[in-house]
Length: 503
Image 1: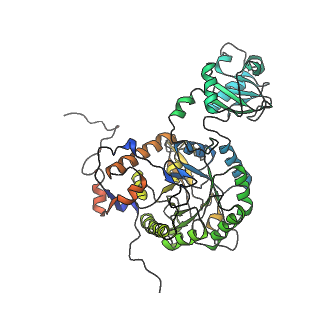
Image 2: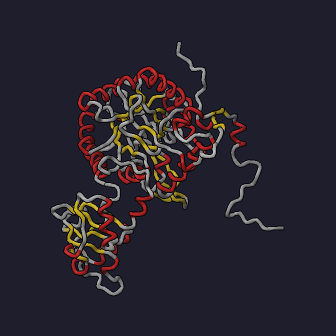
Image 3: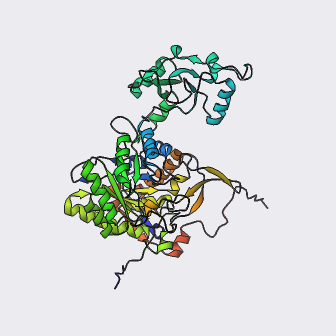
């Protein structure tokens, strides 16, 4: 007879936190959201930690190089999607790792033979008035000059004039060498009253820019997640088919952490993938595994050697695995169960394996609940897909700005490796949908608001750290009626377009 769980499969929306005592020193500015990303032994520090408990999903519509830099700037990690060629994924990782904090790659480049008309067109396309003039017109070319808005007058110059006639030539530029530190670069900017400092190598090839306007913004990013060389931390997704060729390419590109991207991780193929990585790289290469939804799945991947373990099957907003297969578990119940197994494993072995709640996050407070239930961090797809830094397109739907968002198991993605159960290399049916999400603007503003809610809620619970929240949180189930009570009710909500006239 099948094994039946007595506990219903519950979602985060079925729970609320009960306030704890908030002392005079328990204020949001004192809350630490630092959390381990990979496993560590009792009494030791993890090799990698997050400064905020948020990572972006291994999805085509979510995690590209721009997202990776933006999220690392805020203290989290992106996992560059693996449903692409090995070469293009490695190139994305390499681009992120080549971006030092404060060193910006040039995306406005032009050749000396181009015209003022080309400069105007490029400015309109990129929105940037500073342009690098390189011998080949590309970002990696030999720097021969700079064009800024001070070098031309659009209304008084012939638009056919070539760039080399009005640019500021290289011999009149102040530049930094590729080994310069950010501090020294900023000193040069202030000493010479520059707006930007080009960074070049010994052959004069352009490597990056440091901008005066970024000085304050970098001071405003105390949570930046950087490696020992001041480069952004970045992750990448792998599958259980081509890992023997994909992993070496990603490691060579400088990836910091890997994640086996799979809809169901309790499998021999995940164990084989981790075993291969350990045999070839030992513990030097960090790799997460999943997804699982119970203690048995956790123990299997823990024994296989996973550095972190992801929880969740079918809870994502674009995932229809439960509908298609009838398999999965409510995200709240799964997180609670796996957290118990994680704690038991820690007691038994002295090794703490972080767990990641992946899916089922609808509201910001669900993140806090996931942490209180034992998750060390959460993986988000729809949440990040809304931002301008995501690689998906902005479209207009019925007059509203939206971003395209599709599942890795959708017909559009055709990421069969994520749903690998052996046999033929193909997808028999879809497990994800193609959809839209409302465009929400920049990552920084939205993440900042979400983190503020988390910090305030933790203070309401009397907790200043995630471990304290996991230990001391008080939680209650809610009825369907109390869920209704929790929102605005029995009133007509005032709308800015509603014209109410006094009587």
